[in-house]
Structure formats: structure tokens, C-alpha cells
Image 1 (cartoon, helix red, strand yellow):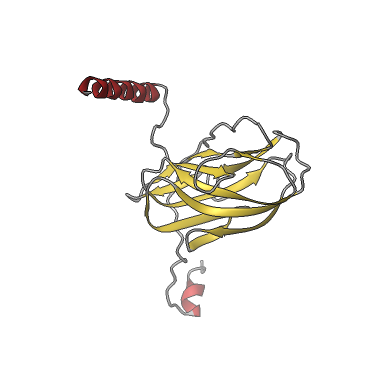
Image 2 (cartoon, rainbow, N blue to C red):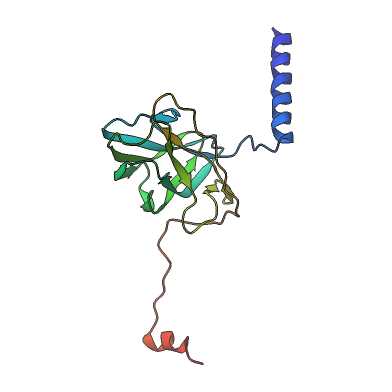
Amino acid sequence: MLRAFVRVLLHLSFLGGALLCMGVQAFATTIELSAAEFYYFCRQPDRPGIVTIYVRTSFNIGTTASRFRVQASPEVTWSYLSETSSFPTTLGNTQSGITICYDQCVVDQAVLVAINYMVFGTSPNCGGQLFVSPHPDAHTVEVINCDGTASSATTVGVVVGDFCSCPSPRSYAGTPQLFGCGPLSTKVSTWGAVKALYQH
């Protein structure tokens, strides 16, 4: 029994070393789109009706916020209807750019947003996909770690069709920036003080 346990540990340490040598971030937070709510499912058939696509985190070692947007490749003929977030503190929406603050440190898997689309059945089978891309105010898909630092997230999309290959993970080059969900701070002032800021 002990020998089998040691063998498993050696295999795991070899795999971890191989991933690091290949430059793979073994513990990068992933923001994924899924056709299923509680697990990753990479395909959504293009059958007429209303479908829900879930935005989820996985491989999450601890984050407090994320910002991104969800886009469709040109082949997808779906229409966006609505969305609901699992977290109350959000700015924007997934189609134009959303910032979600979790109000807690979230570890591992969590559903961030459920997006409803009208499907017409006119997209080519396996010809298009939905994917996560950077928020318009960012250069990469960003998350705030529980220690207060910003980092980039890997993303995985959903392919439209039956019996299709799953989309490859995406990463975006760019430096992650700190961001928040709170309102901009203000202070009481007078009109004279404001005008004085702009005098030469």
C-alpha cells in the first residue's frame, strides 16, 4: 500500500515538473463558458429555443473579483436576451464588459453569470463559438487574487454544434491591472475650488 502511494506521488511530482518545464501555469484561474451549470461542458447544440450559457471559474486558488466580456464568433447567429449574476456587486454586462466583485474570497469552482440566448438553428455545426475576451478597459482577462494582487486568467469557450471538438484554452497578452466595483470616491467642494483647478 505504501509503495503504491509513493509511486503515485512520484508520478504527480514528475507531471508537475513537466508542466512547469513546458511553461504551463498549473494553478492559473480559468474563466470558462459552459453549457452545463455545475461542470464544464464545451458544446451547445444549435437547436431553436432559449439556451443558457454559464460563465464559471475553475482551477481557482482564490480570487475576489474578475472582469471580462463574452463574445461570439461571426458564424454564431444567436441573439443575446438577458443575464443574471450569482454575485450582487457587478458593473456592466457580459456583452459590453462586466466587472464582478465577489465580496469574499472564492476558491475553486463558482458560477459567475448565467447568460440567456435565443437560438435560431441557423449557425453552422461546429463552425462558431462563444468565448471570453478582455474587458474593454483591460488588455487581458483579469482577476483579483485574495492577496489583493491582479493576475491574468486563462479562458475556455463553448463551441456551437453537436459532436464538435472542444475549443482550445485562450490566454491574452497584457499586464493585469487592479480594479474594483465600488463607486468612485467624491468629496465636497465649491464651484470656485473647481474653477481654480483649471486656471493657468
